Structures are given as structure tokens and as C-alpha cells.
Amino acid sequence: MTRKKLLTAYCLSYGNWTVIPHQWDECFGEMRDLGFDAVALSFSESEMRYARRTFEMQVAAAHKAGLAVHVIPSRIGGRLAGAPFMGSLWLNSFPGARLPENSNVACVESPEFREWSLGFIRQLIGDYELDGIIWDEPKAADFVTAHPDTVAALGENYGVEGICRSFAGLIGEWTTAAREIRPELTVSIFNMPHTNPIFTGLCAGLPGIDYAGFDGGLALASFFHETPFKNKPYLWETWPRTAKECAENNCGTFALIENMLLPESQHENFAENLENFLESTQPDHLACYYYAHNNENPAEAHRITMDLIRKLYLNKKRRIA
Image 1 (cartoon, rainbow, N blue to C red):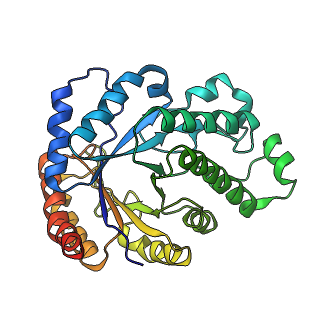
Image 2: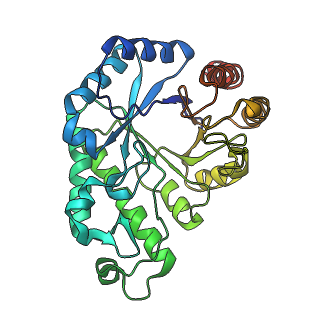
């Protein structure tokens, strides 16, 4: 099956405490001119509480520039990634839903959490003119907990497979709820490379999921001035798994290029590895960060990323079209 190729700019833009609309126009216009089809924007519990109008304006500005908008529901009960890097506001008010082993993560079988999270997704999708969702790095996917709601729902000896099925089932409920409101949504999910294969395989097979895969680095990383190190598995290391899981479930492939945390000393290595990856693979849905987070030389890292994507992904995408 030939799927439409999709290129998305990860531009989380959390915390727009100062709103300068012409800067949005400039950035979204540049994304369009670079060849992006869509922009991915974060929407956390904080936005729902304190930035509703701002997000509506941001979505409208992206659409005006000709971009689709894929929302990233972020940090929902500590069960998803996305910006910002912070705990769940909801869990502060409902401590009984916290896992006893990790107070930053909600129990997926908590009736209160399920009801609230489904309501959050319905409100998010219903209130904004969105084109897609990206479920970003589900957290604690295979964590076996003693939380009483999990034990009551799954039994005393439910094990790793039981919790993987439970959490994947909840993501399936979120997806169904969103599609009931906007059937035309494009829905993608990606996991951290170390996530249990039981869970990632289930995710690729969920009804309503269009694309599935992983994020990954392409060079050594550095957060500040420390010696560069391998922060997470590289994209080409997880690609065979992506291809297998998606083929088994008739799902499109996804990959997020982690073009962030780059010291200048790794630019050559990053460029070589990105070139090799894109020459050997063509994800159905490819994403990368737009001026990625915490690079030593943001402009140069961005140029390298976009030059290679233009040469090795966009040109092939246009030939296929």
C-alpha cells in the first residue's frame, strides 16, 4: 500500500506568555517554504487552564500559512511526553490516582483518570480546528503497579502483558474519542526505543492509528559542556522494528529525528548519519525539530537537517507524488 508522505515540524512552543503574532507568521511561513506539510504544537494541562485563546490564535496562524496542525497532548497525568518537562497539574488535585511506586504517573485503570483524560481529549479536539494528533512517547507502558485500581481491574497476577494491554487500550479510547469528533484526523504514535515490544506492537495495531514508530538520535549528545555521550538509541537501530510492527498491522511508518542537544563537534557525525538514514529509509511520516532544543549552534544544526531532508526526503516525496 502506498501512503501519502508527510513531513512535520516539531515546534512545541509551550508557554507563549508573550504573544507576537508576526513571529508566528514568519516561522510558519518558513516551515511551509522549507517543505513541511504540518506543524506539531504542544497542548498541556497548563494551556487548557491558562492559554486557550493563545492556542486558538496559533492554530489559525499555522493554517493561514498553509500548514496542517498536529496537536501533541502533553504530560497528561504523566502518561505522555511533549513540552513542558513538568509534572501533571491534575495529579496534584487527585493524589489517589498516583502510582504508589511513582507519584508522577497516573494509574491507567483509575476511573477518575480515565474520565478526566477522555474529557480532556474530547475538549481539545472539539474546541480547535485540528488536523492530527501525535501521541508522544507514552510513559511507564509496562510498569507493573500495586495500585488498587489496577489490581481490581486486571487481577492480582496481571503481569507486564496485562498492563501493556491496559495502557494501549486507554490510548485506543483516546483515539476513538478524538475520531468521533473529527473523523478526518491523522493520528500518529511514537514510542521511546526501549519501550516493551508488546506495547509498541499493540500501539501500531490500534484502530484509528495511521502512523507508528520511534524517535531517536543520530549523533552523540551534550546537555551543556560535558563530554558528548549517546543519549538514546539511534534511529537506524529501531527502524527494523518500526518496519516490522507497521507491516504486521498495516500501519504507516513514523520517525522523529532528534536533531537536538547537538554540540558543534558532532555536526559532521550527525550529517553523515542522517544522510545514511534517509538514503536507506523513507518513513511515511517523518518529523524533525524546527530549530531544535539546546543545540550549541542552532542555525547550523537546522541548516544541516533541512538540507539533507530536502535532498533525500522531499525530492523523493515529490517524485512519488
